[in-house]
Image 1 (spheres, rainbow, N blue to C red):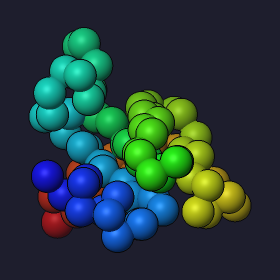
Image 2 (cartoon, rainbow, N blue to C red):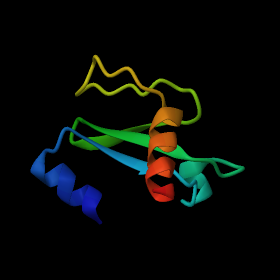
Image 3 (cartoon, rainbow, N blue to C red):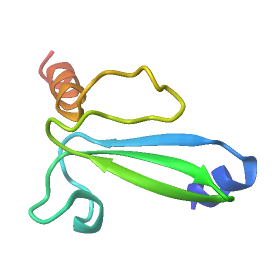
Length: 82
């Protein structure tokens, strides 16, 4: 699994964006919905925070980030249309 490799390399943070809500329910909720996940390395293990809809994304690596999960999903879906 890539996550174990990321931990071994000490990558402090990574993101997974499921803009169509196709992932497993444990990742996207029930009912499934688009989800933005931020994984942060804490004590050599990743902790995840999930953001959906109008949740403001919180990223320790980018503390001044001011964007909602929905804004990311809308941009991704606009790219699919073009």
